[in-house]
Image (tube, rainbow, N blue to C red; front, side, top):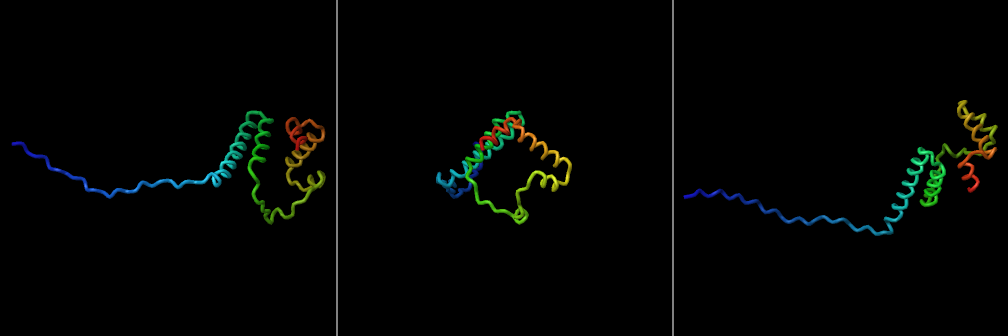
Length: 125
């Protein structure tokens, strides 16, 4: 006579309802997709600039600026004193020699019309 194997029954668990994702309307998803596109365009611009494709980089930045609608801009107290200065006044306010030299270089490039792609963008805007 053969010995019977003991029977191990699994305890019955209650059937759990499968959790489903809630449907998201397209109208709430669309602004996030547009912001994601603008973010990707900005990151692509950085990559293009590293690869010396400055015209494409500027184009991607302009695309990102126009695709994503601007939100409400809140100016903090440190920016309340913002003012437009002449080049000479700005040079007097800079603390470091490298800042002064950078401003002089920018003024020289933009005044001679020899700024390359930057000059082309400034002409368009």
